[in-house]
Image (cartoon, rainbow, N blue to C red; front, side, top):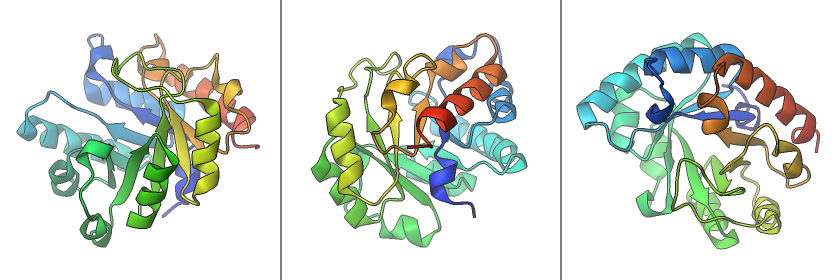
Length: 213
């Protein structure tokens, strides 16, 4: 297994609103070819059975590229599909994630405060999703946090963190010095005409402005 810190470099999160006539597999394949290092399958409105079937197909794609597949919020689909992990928001966080860890799952947790970050670390979370740093084009109710808050969160725990929320090729450089291990992107990747090219460009920017700090 690779170092989780390296896998977080360019964390792609799917959104079927950006498929634009493509299948989910086609869109994910382009992102993988472009160099994404971790992929989260996010399906808020898909029926459970369809979500599971899709997760199994995407898992096979990710395995071909040795990229971990994370399932958003749905623990059952994560386990049944053979995905590598699950990402949980604060409202979806169980009292204990020990059982998930025992099954070998990577567990990511959303954190907007230092207290949430420390609690997630104590529970055994493998990484944190910190934001929204620039608002969010895909999550209208996302609560923004300041860069100072982001830095405080990252400095308060040993668990690596990715910055999320409106991150794109134009503003990645603003995240220098926040002690993030990578960025999570949705529209900056999947709402682009050339997804593969967008992924490659984003990866280069993260390596230049974030991984060197």
